[in-house]
Image (cartoon, rainbow, N blue to C red; front, side, top):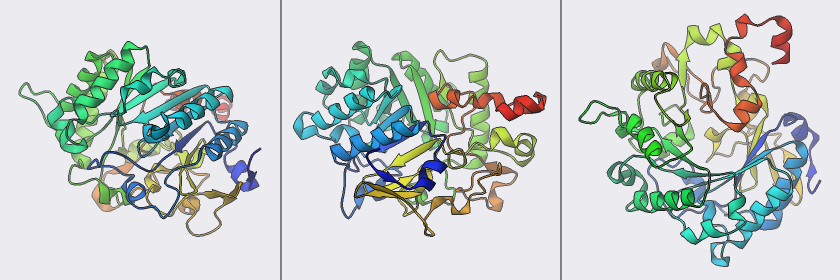
Length: 377
């Protein structure tokens, strides 16, 4: 191992499957809803992870068992841009040499298109482009002028070069409105992704849920009541095979009764599973993305050490690790009645690398399984 690692860290992450490497905190956009703004706007030092440290980190996490790597930011294509992206390309090459089974990058899509032609960049198993609307009017109101045009142009070039391209989209007020034909713009977004031959679309929710990112989501969030109706409508279309591409959409909430019926299924929680780690330039290692922009994490890395956080800022402090509960980090006030929040990564029947590795859908009908089968799950 390259780092001297606290045994409590390795024990907690004994089932690790994936890491999210936030390689740089800088970004060329200023999106309304960005939950990373506290990191992008204010960091005392270490706005990016130096290349050797990044390589050592992915080495050790691979040794621990991680098989999927997501390279993120800020905007990760800014990493080493002034050097023709050599540090970024070297990191991608290193990850494949180390044996990561799935390596992806999450980008706003406004990068210099020459990057797509680099042979190391072509090693990526997936490029995920962030786009928040099926038209420039909807998208650019949130992400900035000409972002729709530049992002879609790079998507089309990437597809022409044979890349596996996904779209990530935030669910905001404009997307739950309806067009002149009565169709949800959320449905229009999926249809748009289909029309340009995207492999898959992944949605993220935006709710005022009593978490730090609330301060950075502007006034475009969706109410719980509105979302439950919209989610049910879209989920029915998914279940009816109305879309030609996989759609990953967060359920976000369920009723208390439904949760109680199958805690094993609805109790999905990355913090309790210990299947991931989020690594940031400021030295904090987190588990839950809802803690980004806060001092909370589970460990810090520095001076070739990974040190377990023994203070009140350990994000696991409020978790009942051995119980299946609604999301611990989201506010559970009376306004949610009769709903309870589930993990933001809880997206039923999703086609996703780690979700499939965990065989999570097997838990859905857990009451029908025998005791031995439940133990195996």
